[in-house]
Amino acid sequence: GAVVSQHPSWVICKSGTSVKIECRSLDFQATTMFWYRQFPKQSLMLMATSNEGSKATYEQGVEKDKFLINHASLTLSTLTVTSAHPEDSSFYICSARDWGGLAGGAKQYFGPGTRLTVT
Amino acid sequence: AQKITQTQPGMFVQEKEAVTLDCTYDTSDQSYGLFWYKQPSSGEMIFLIYQGSYDEQNATEGRYSLNFQKARKSANLVISASQLGDSAMYFCAMREGPADSWGKLQFGAGTQVVVTP
Image (cartoon, rainbow over all chains, first blue to last red; front, side, top):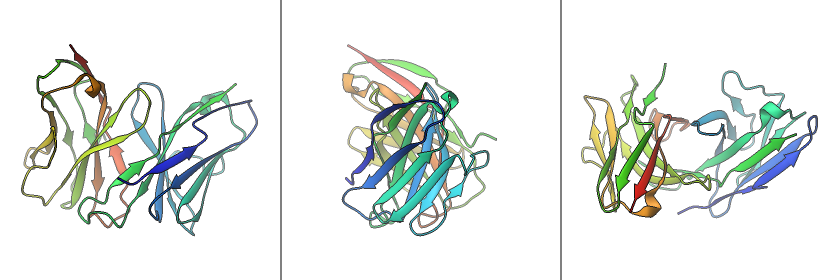
């Protein structure tokens, strides 16, 4: 199956600083990537849809100025948490659509996630 | 309103037994897709199985099968011959719209499965 990587796998930062998380599709081109966040023992909540070469589409309630998304190439999307605060501490997961896969399946492949802790 | 409902927060199952994880969904779209993912403690999301709304046969992938009952809007996951490595959180998810649409997934709350020897 297709592989999606995320970097870093975990990060600790101080309150007020910014953190950038990278999501890469390693063996396929991903025109569409998604960013999710997951709090402990909870489900995944979609934050935004990232499209290569255009602005991201944010879900209701997600601050676009706080969570900056850039999808500059067909294999890379980045999420920058600006002026991070302790309440931003969470597990951030990206996924990428493999449009070249089964037409009916249109599978989404997930990255391994990034655990962010803001102190 | 909740689009995906998983009513079982946790389940214990004995090794080699079969287990059924419930999932009901709510959509007015005619074209949609249903997914099951497994999330072990490491956090990665592992794709298990997919069912399209127009697929007439229930999807199967190895030990995983999806019991798709369209009229009841349910998409239960059946894991046969459970193994210790199956212990994980399992999420049901839905994509509304056809396969070539944006493809946003909405996830259920998840079911924690613990397989015991």
